[in-house]
Length: 289
Image (cartoon, rainbow, N blue to C red):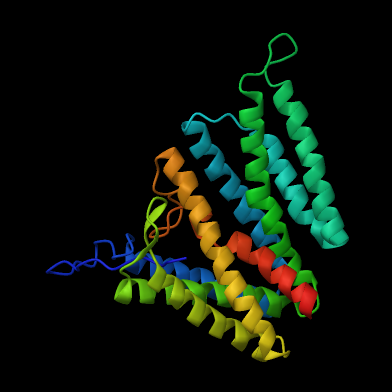
């Protein structure tokens, strides 16, 4: 969510410098546009590939988070997280939420045993609860929430549901960025993310809710008031999801989780607000459609 407060622009703009949001804006726009076009093409012609796209993205994101946590002194179980995470995502296709939650619970059990015996049977594990809790957190944060976003595509009007997720998140980000840069003066949570402003949050609510109403009316062909519920709930959860990643990065003393996407950081840096948003879109649309 881009709800940054404004800063004074430099006297002589330099296209190679970062924007007031702290990013290389031309590179960020180019990458974002390319990703958006790719997703649109997939949803229009081969929507089921969405499952594979989500699975690959979160395999990369798991690697990014693992490396950053390892560098920060955390010992988490990479292979159970990677394999179990893929199982959680793919289990939703044939078995729905039952498959997702079963795979999640099974992976937690594997993590418990894996980390218990990580040093062999003759040496007790170190910081067992600390490292196990971190591993379970990563499992819930990444593949569990992602699985609900992937599962959208196999529901009725699946491509339209995924498009709704992407459009509303983009609208929320654009509204937050524009209002934050133009009007942002009051930080939301300065101890966690100093550049996020209440003005930016209002922009996210206005533009995000407008996008949600438009999507449910024109893409899903249903009642406008569903968008009035979906929009604000998604914006609030997306903002909180972004703050969660901000605090994780603050704990680790880093700016980005990776460097794969120019102007955006890593894959995980683009998924922070999408993760809770994916679950919210699944939950609201499943309940109300």
